[in-house]
Length: 187
Image (cartoon, rainbow, N blue to C red; front, side):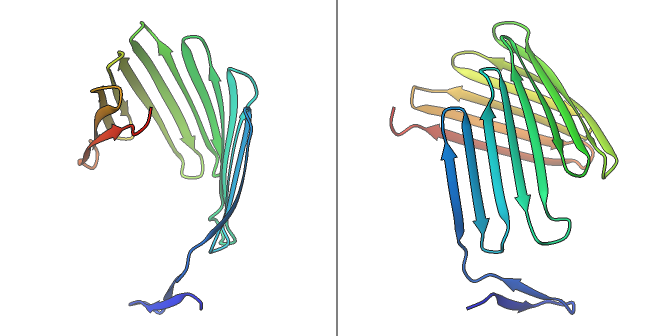
């Protein structure tokens, strides 16, 4: 019982696995979480979240593969202050990023982010706003990569929330919108 071979228009044959399974292990305590999975095709997915203090967290994600150039890794360093949050990211392919969001008032927060993808020689900068009350959260983001994103969540009751988001790429003129709900079964 091996993969199913599907002919294609080129000389290459596509192989699709007929069965899928994962073997995994988890380690979770109050300050450290380790999650690992080995997939059918031999890939290894691993995640780490380590709270070094109440304010400082390190996160790591990795996907290791035996296929050339298909392994990926990312580190995040998060710092949470009294009225701000900051994050620094670095990953393979010379990927670097930083973000910062500051509470301006009790309800309004403003922030920004920058990134550099050295392997692809691309950079970006973006700005974000968040307005929050006890019944709703509205966010907006705009970036020089062409993305404008808006989201809104309304709390209808203790168990029900309604949400919507809109994403627009002004360079390609692609638009995506969605509407959803959250219903808490137990509380």
